[in-house]
Amino acid sequence: MQTLGAKSAADLDKELMSEDGGFTIDQLMELAGLSVAEAVYKVHPPSKGKNVLITAGPGNNGGDGLVCARHLHHFGYTPRIYYPKPTKAAIFTGLQKQLNHLHIPFLTSLEEFTSALASSDLVIDALFGFSFKPPVRAPFDTVLSAIIDSKKPVLAVDIPSSWDVEGGPPEQGQLGSEFMPTYLISLTAAKPCVQWFKGERHFIGGRFLSADVAGKYGLDVPPYEGVDQIAEVPVDVSVEKL
Image (cartoon, rainbow, N blue to C red; front, side, top):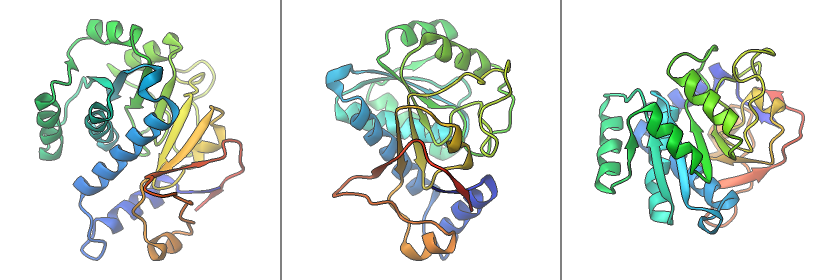
């Protein structure tokens, strides 16, 4: 499987949002969040339980989680969001307003988060993306520890939180060393740490790359079907870093 390291992933995002690329951060986040929501529907349709807890970090990965929450609401789920460090940039405040209009609750305390976690059918890990550098710091260390201890099924967005994009899970004994999400959706392309992923299902999301741009970065566009924004790929594969 071809994977994008942190620098290549950042370069690709920069190119997509350049004058020549033509995309905006809003568009890419919307497409990413829609992909995450579709992956949820694929692995855990509402008939299996509608209570979905989204844990959102302060960066773009968290923004993908916020977009996902909006789509999940319209897909028939009951999403709840724990967003302990909201970002004040316009794109994030706009997403929060959209969610407030839909009466999707933002949990404001660890107590509310813990209660919601206990009654959730699925957890979305949208804490950190490919730019994350270990270790996990407060308050996210408490959040991640609770998710791991809960044994709830987890869908990780882009990379499992606490993992290094290149090196995978932290060393034994560190927070996240035993974290293995049930599902993973890699955005645009898989990252090198995917070689350590041993969960049940893996998807590529983000159906927006042209063949020309994909070829420039040595990527093959996955075989998206019909109107799907995601493509399922094998879990246990060897990887090639690009």
